[in-house]
Length: 485
Image (cartoon, rainbow, N blue to C red; front, side):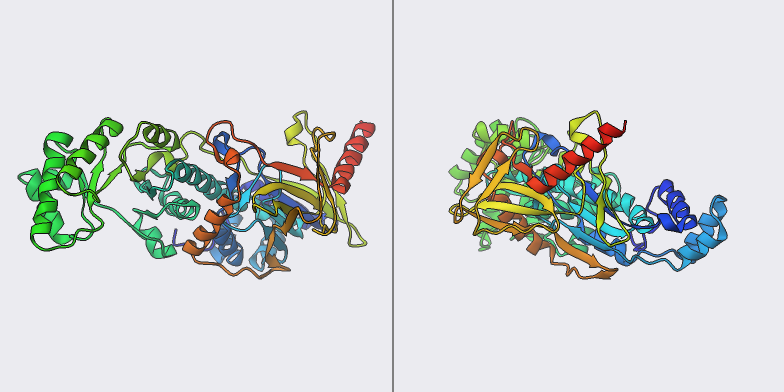
């Protein structure tokens, strides 16, 4: 993780294609590639864009070191003139993206690369690796936080993550999407996010008895005293000893705040309700009951429905690994090639599967909101030269079933052009924000969704529509492909 130069974080075929374009310089034209995904993960109604900061740092550091060149030479398939070119390589293109922390939806460009095709091919793998993973974890975290209904969610997944990089950048993504903090200290240092944690069962077991362990811990952390109560017997030993410890602190004149218990096993609904009654009867009504143990959005929703008295949740394995949907599915497809006059010739990928047919051309996205509520109506993908105004009526139609239409009058809606520039002609124009500021932005983004699109089961899907001009361009290309066969 301490290596900032990730230039060789790529698939070999990107480099073999680069050499091919290098040898045939007439083919190394400026092109446009779109990175997008086809389906929201987890059966959800939305996704969260995440990973922009690492993507920007990757492109900033994009160069082939002497060691990289020597390694590529050792493979035996690259010519010296191409290796000499790589030795002086730097990215000269432009990159646009949906802002980090923003909502995004299937089939719309989440990242757009405009560059000579050699350069655009080189960055493909790393862009997908970074955005796919971090967006996946952010989307999972957003669902878990929604299920918690305002309770705090702590990210606890480092020891179960697929390596240090996934554990650390995944924790950052989880915080951006709504988690209140992480147990990952490295993430805390790198990204200035809150780190939290209590103690393990081994702490309890290392002492002669549970009460001594609790009191020793309380003496060290009297204002952050969350005690793990299920080492021996939750209701007969753990909770009673926690109550004795809280009374011990109160008798010493210590103001109790940030204190409570953690449940890590057993029937969490039953145990939490019993523990709540015991704590309240002892005069500790404000003691927090937190829980962990293979939690996810579905289990948290179930526990909420059962009236569990839990108000803080530590979520690990299922969050950091996105266990029920472990890949995001983002792809990277050619959308246009620049012609001699500087214009871009749209390109389309055709498939037997309708959802795999790409949207051609140089595109941008307008996000459309209901003016009165600020809620999201739809996203409109259009060609880059198109301009839409809130002062004009707007007709939206389903690109698969185009007879389905929505007509919006001026004054009923607002528009926002979604994608922002990261690099222009090789120069970085993106200013990174603090992670907690991105989190605030992400929470506001989620608030623009209707509740029907946030529900965990069978959510309403946000419409992603095409402008009439883009729709016609796509159909013209499809007809040309069909006629040429």
